[in-house]
Length: 146
Image 1 (cartoon, rainbow, N blue to C red):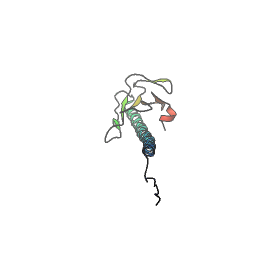
Image 2: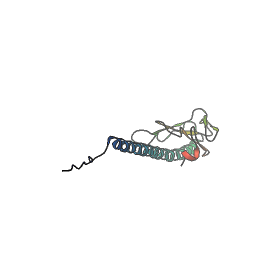
Image 3: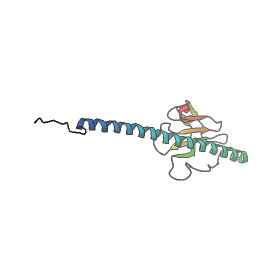
């Protein structure tokens, strides 16, 4: 009688290790993409809020004829929940990376609105002045102000 040798069905340890490595790589890429997407979403919401705040500042200035003493309608984005960006008016000039320009301190004639990220962000602080000039302390304006 001849014996038939059958190969065991299943995966070898090497095949299993390769499969786990591939799945791990896919998860890492997906997580990085998701985090970038969430950061862009938070930044877009902050930009929208900054434009709304700038409109409110112009209205206050129209009444008081100065930007000194104006108040921000709200201090963070999103308005409810955990802050992803915090808003403030520049008390001193702020040097931007892009464009390479010193945004002015808030004075009777103008303001610089700043959105400071609560965590690490690829764009750093977002800047908007009374003329509508946009800037960032890290990165490029075209990438950050979408």
